[in-house]
Length: 161
Image (tube, rainbow, N blue to C red; front, side, top):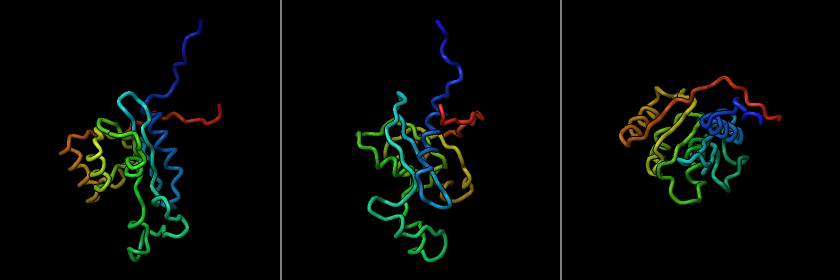
């Protein structure tokens, strides 16, 4: 009898990979973010990516980052974390874990706290010095939500089998 494979990916690699794959669905020309919410027993509960709400056409709303607030994306887009929370149809997310490709902003932190998610694994923290992320970390710490930087293994994911 042969032994099992030893080079399989870890749960963190798997779920961050799902979050990264979800980010690829975003039509935002500048920033693509994905999220994956997971139960304590490693079951995927929900996924999301940044984009416009259902019924708001990607072609009719602006993708600009600058200019008049009514003519840029910020009033219209939903972040990946909030999308993943809103996409969940199974009841409570109490105790769940969130994998996200970009550290959550203050608005998403509020939703994460209210949803009962207890830990966050994030990849990038490129906005760490912004007021939004500073406030986010302050609230998450106050609410007892742990957050961890994803540890890259250097493994390439190959989609061909």
